[in-house]
Amino acid sequence: MNKIHAAITAVGGYVPDYVLTNRELETIIDTTDEWIRTRTGILERRILKGADQGTSVMGIKAVQQILEKKSLDPADVDLLICATTTPDMQFPATANLIAAECGMVNSFSYDINAACSGFLYALTTGAQFIENGRCKKVIVVGGDKMSSIMDYEDRATCIIFGDGAGAVLLEADDSGHGIIDSILKSDGNGWKHLHQKAGGSRRPATAETVANKEHFVYQEGQTVFKFAVTNMADVAAQIMDRNQLSGEDVAWLVPHQANKRIIDATAQRMNVPEDRVMLNIMKYGNTTNGTLPLCLWEYEKQLKKGDNLVLAAFGGGFTWGSTYIKWAY
Ligand code: UT7
Image 1 (cartoon, rainbow, N blue to C red):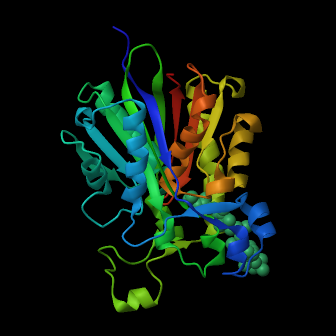
Image 2 (image 1 turned 180 degrees about the horizontal axis):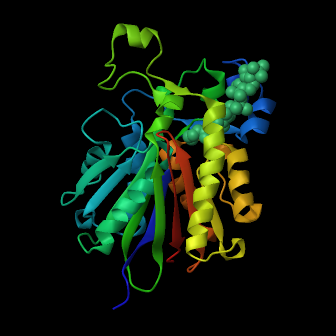
Image 3 (image 1 turned 60 degrees about the vertical axis):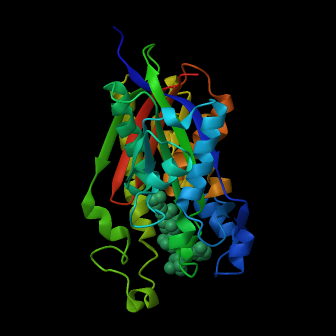
């Protein structure tokens, strides 16, 4: 019998309507459109506005698209995993909220938090349930409302992040397509350089932590940049090596969208030309867990069965990883 792989068989995505342009940021912080473009490649990002609107709102829309596209009865979904760093609440899991709202009455669901690498962690985890036969249909969501933890006075950080969510459906494939290989890495020593200081069990929320702005993203940009450039390129090169893929064999690099300069360095290392690199950073900035599924969502029409995709990410933790997919449709 042929090996069973978990194949992505549908993609959904959602970004909020509100567009926060570099020009508008110029009116909020001491920055320029030119600085942001040249240092990051970002022109604008989306922001989820309105009261009581959490990450689940965007995840639900992305999942509903998949259900509609595939005429899928939500009762037939076995598992929903949500990768997010900005859950609606500390608990319950945002995945529980999405699954319930989408009518997945027979599923179990949980969140995974691996910051910007979370979607790859969730994809790999979801794939195991397909490969071992425990589940037939798994939905993996990646999404974040980064604006909810952003200090719009911290000009080095707030310019890169935005809101959005994407989702993929995983089903079994025995024809050699699907998720072929995955490398996941983490090093918790990196926490100091990228984290949220308060709101967790170590420093629960108090009036003081709020006044000190400890509920926002704390990022040492340059340090994170250095680790990201090296590790994202290394892990992508490693997965290519062990699957005997050259740059020419890679139809698409699907990189985490944190900074265009990190993406360029990774593509260069892999020997993949720019026209085969998925990019949405210009429009959406860094949507953390949303970047990779949103790339797949936007480029879906350009993908062909059998295309080799290499996904790569780096983020808080530190976490990083790469996944090799042979596209299934
Ligand atoms: O997705 C998860 C992982 N995150 C990442 O991968 C992000 C990695 N880091 C980065 O992408 C970059 O470090 C940033 C885009 C966040 C920042 O860019 P940078 O080139 O590393 O800037 P910097 O923080 O080293 O600051 C350089 C200079 C400073 O001025 P001085 O001290 O040289 O006079 C900053 O004050 O640029 C200044 N600066 C700005 N100037 C205009 C910082 N932010 C801005 C700004 N507009 N928005």
